[in-house]
Length: 202
Image (cartoon, rainbow, N blue to C red):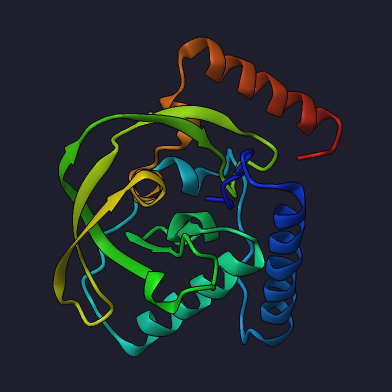
């Protein structure tokens, strides 16, 4: 999930944030041991459910670190393993984009166990570059997942965090945000993608 746009933020503040985030991105690209390229729709890995994680090993922890680096390098605030062509139920989220370490969240084998309210906000996707549309989501969710040690925990989120968790959990089940659009809007998006493909822009 790419960084959210904030139309109510002053232009000079937006410029400052873009500069700061670009510096973070460039630093990670230079220093990261390994970056995984993000695959684009309609890659088949994006369209099928990921496999549950059953072994919690040092290799898994290393892959999670690589996912965070890959997410930051792509200027995202959320990334699911299928987006880097690994069909497993793992996602990483950081809605602060590297600004607050406590916001880093790893969800392994996540399940939404409670949800309330509604929100209708714009979303994008690292696997659907240049595509942004408003999506209906729950306003508050509670998720049960495992951490990199295999320990179960629960996490709650509202607003942007709720959207990010729901967006990334969808990825783990082969669902893209365009699948949440009306049939008409989804058809228009797919037509736009096909046009970009024909023009060599996708």
